Length: 204
Image (cartoon, rainbow, N blue to C red):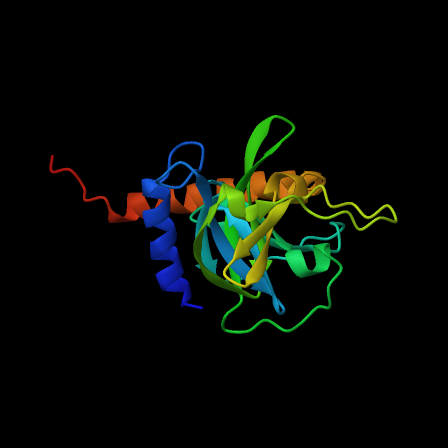
């Protein structure tokens, strides 16, 4: 496992080298950003990932699903943050210095939207060949595994590869619309005010 800064650099490099389909350089596999929830390691296709940021102030929003931690103001843009542990029904733990937010872009109702997912830690960028990715097993009993893209075999381990569009596809963020518009408007006004203060008067 490497540090968040190193993983972020590796992510940017991998994205720059990947094709628009998210395939690896040889066209025979895909690249994934891996992260941990507890002892389990998961993966997201890197083309869905916009950036990795450290834990920052999160504003709680009333009457939102229990797995929504709140929203963050990322450079003037309001982004909902989802606790992936809670969404998956896992035990809640205290945040640590390794806790971070992965900002992803998904499609909801035909439109792209950015969301943050809170994870225990990021691990590395993995290149997994198509031949090393198997379909998710059937667990029976009506257990839904549609959100699992596949199981990636890396050395002697198995990584759970997520279809992030399906993980977040049913997330209800409708109640965040008004707050999003207000916060972004406030950020714009603040930026304009700072610009006016720093502007030098034009000599007559």
